[in-house]
Length: 66
Length: 211
Ligand SMILES: [Zn+2]
Image (cartoon, rainbow over all chains, first blue to last red; front, top):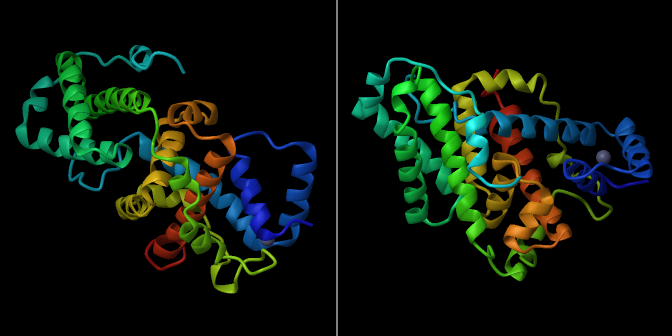
């Protein structure tokens, strides 16, 4: 059984490379039971989307009008 | 990714329009400040950042007459800026000594404190549900918080994270550019993500701010 810390490492790794079968199974076995890690996993998806949005340069804090 | 300027041409070419707005000094100054902020997030050298912005603006102005409006111009100018930033990062052989990047144990310890000895989340640090997180993307205030969180990342983490997620370079390319091993890079990206998750949860999703 993976620890939460190992799970967060694996979730981060999954954004860099495809996980292998064994890793996927271990990850799923943990997140099925652990809501904190489930939340972490989905927040990583949000973070990536937010960065893509941010990279468009449309949301600028100094933006007053456009 | 190959030559950094190639892909500019593939970005939607703007058509004719109200170029006159682009000569509004106040608007341009505002745009310039935004660009400098972006460049500074990735290049630790204010002069280099300033130069990149200058060049991007000059490059964009050559085509200014063909823009349909400000937002098309802005998209264009940021696309050029990104490419300038990639060029600058490419020219830098190393970010810093690897030992500084990784063996910074204060950083490792700070993040390890999110977990107990067995590697389980400490009660106060358990990530909570963010609900419908993308709803927040429509709120200007969210982006203020987001940028604050990015700015709070330690310098080297910020750099590799921005190369990865903002510029969109892949692992292999970043490792080559900054002379890191894949596993060192992964550690840095992991730490940056943990920090950002924590920061966004504290300053936005976990609080009342977005409700
Ligand atoms: Zn867990």
